[in-house]
Amino acid sequence: MMLSKQKKNQNVNHNQRRLLISINVLGSAGPIRFVVNEEELVEAVIGTTLKSYAREGRLPLLGSDNSAFFLYCPHLGSDAALSPWDKIGVHGARNFVLCKKPHATNETADDGSGNSTSGTSSIPRRGSSGSWKSWFNLNLKISSH
Figure 1 (tube, rainbow, N blue to C red):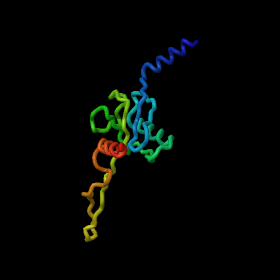
Figure 2: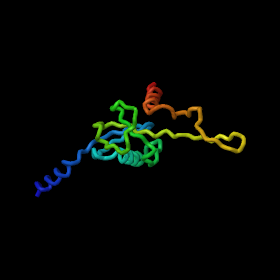
Figure 3: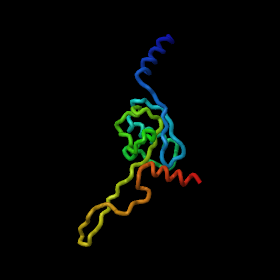
Figure 4: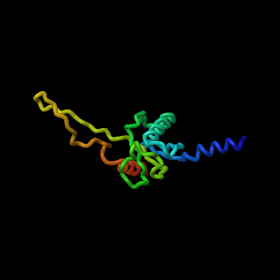
């Protein structure tokens, strides 16, 4: 009887590789670690990360909107975020960085005639410039003294 259970488990696990991944959330202390199927989509991994983050009561509060976040893999050497439709195991990486997407601001200006024109502000907002790497490097410099 034990032999039949072992065979059944081997068949199920043979097709699915599982990975222990570590996700650092910018602005939070310590990574979140959990096991995922290598065929899991990046979007689902972001959702699982947000749920685990909230369950643990971490700060700052992030919310639960998967589409408001990017998942990066610093070991790939690319500054581009992973596509939400990629499989998490496709790059062979196990360490990732989760950060919030920058908010695009469209301000409305009144030209005095009652007509409003929309455009973007020429003054950069604090904390909205650059990539996640520049923000990460800035925080390391501040916290290392």
